[in-house]
Length: 256
Image (cartoon, rainbow, N blue to C red):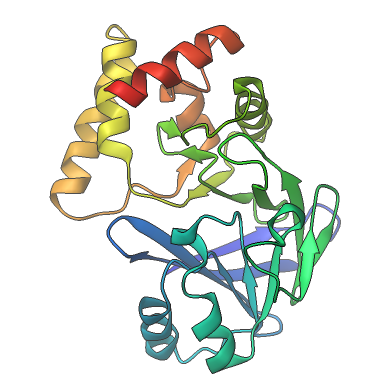
């Protein structure tokens, strides 16, 4: 568990503390629990399956108050019904995901602000991987949960949407402060790093990071979260000079 104690820019003497627990679901999905220390409120970001979430909550002695859904793909919502039945958690889902999650308690979109206890969460529309995708930005904690929009050294596939949508979403994330931690929905980094080196073979930062990723995965260590600074240096999709180059790189990755 990583504990974030971050000074809120609006509070001169108060620190907002949050516990963050990332764990594997299914084959390569990640789910993340966040707990606001001040109130004990617990939220889950995406629910690929119920059993790993229940096990993690039991291990920590936590309940579950909220489920924040980034997008409606099955491997991000499969666990929702069982978790709602067990904990009575409220479901907050993207406004364009009403067909997949009609039981959601609230549908959210760009500009909405949520509260996880005393913690402010901003909703960003980040379409591109799919039309309904949102990300959850916690400005005081300098973290963002991006689902399948961005991966460590990578980005999501594009399904029937123009590439400029995903490119714009990546650029928006990349404009956050360098220390911002990026939590994504899958462990795809080794393949992403190898593709990055094939794309920019003379990039020393990518060369070094591939070695680090290989060592981490050999030990079973997650490569999530990453940071904005790391992605600016080594994510070839974020580093694309324009939409055309981004689209070409995304298509090349599809065949890699």
